[in-house]
Length: 105
Image 1 (cartoon, one colour):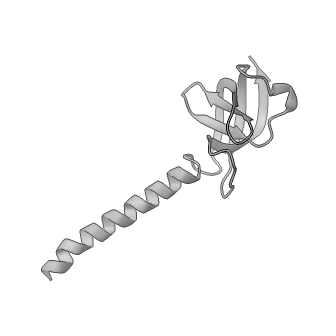
Image 2 (cartoon, one colour):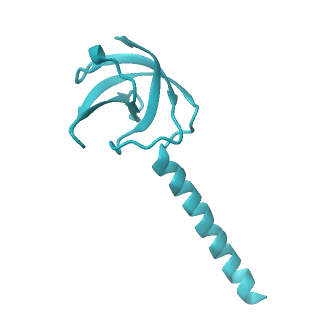
């Protein structure tokens, strides 16, 4: 009985820790969440280079459908997007999103 009392909390802590880490690695945001924010387009020189959005709050987003005319480093934008779930990208930078609307500021 003493072994169970000691071992059970360790097992539960391990399982909770694994679950939290997995969610953070996948996207850092809850899939389906709608985002309304302003920020800057960033050209990131990783994995051959790509464009992302760094929001005002410091969060980084990887838009899978960024229009070509917005692919300009340091361009200030306002955007509405939805966080994607169950998607793997080669960028390893930011939460994958699909843009619903984007405009210049």
